[in-house]
Image 1 (cartoon, one colour):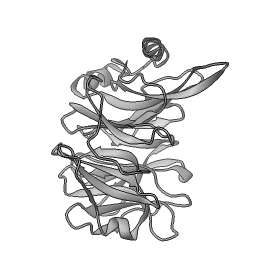
Image 2: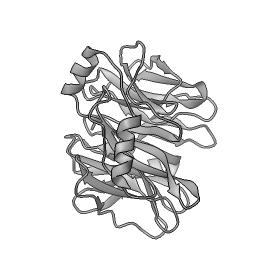
Image 3: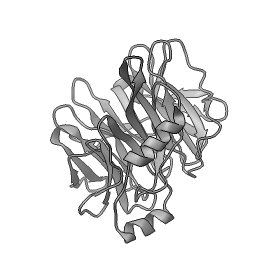
Image 4: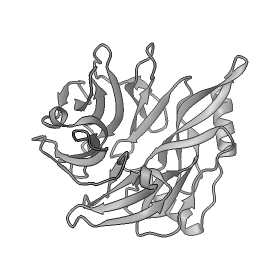
Length: 301
């Protein structure tokens, strides 16, 4: 079944793009993403999620996981040699972090020593490759947790987890000293916050409307954040020093910056697209047939 899925994915996710875009993709690592598709399930069709990689120009597409059920929220390590992802999401198979090599080999559970009823989501590698930040369900709310990759030891980032609720989508700053994440402050909508990894002191940096903000991603120079504002149906770039906002994409979500800072990949409907971080017309990376969706792209480590 896995081989058929991989072949089908390669057929239906086709790409366009200019020679310049193809040239730049040769110098960049691939984009890792989750794709949702329908598979035969007795007399009906069931949904299945797997993790795949694809180059910026749509070439080199390859499925990395072939297991039934849910596998998603993939994230590159900074050296692009390892991928963290989440496997499972049911009572019998709770969502937990797994690791694998860049080519999909050596898939194994992360040494996080999960607690009863715990659910882990949105893993994010530290630049030094020694830690992973994640959103962890404790039974009453989501905490911002930092795991030691080698030992699995954990530290809840305080006072973030005491003062904010619904914490999700952590993202390490390029220097490793800060974490950006989405959370609720009181009864307010979901906003983007930035916290010190060492002290846990945090500050709100966004002012999204209605249901709030989505996932954020740092620019490689650490000066800007790109994030989605689903209710406004836009993706914005925030200059952290000046507070200036710039709309980069309309009708998109799940943005992620390229390692060289020149591009941003995002989800548009059921496909992945890339756009220059300076602005311009987005270009399609993947195409999907009915019942196929490209989701949750991640590019930078």
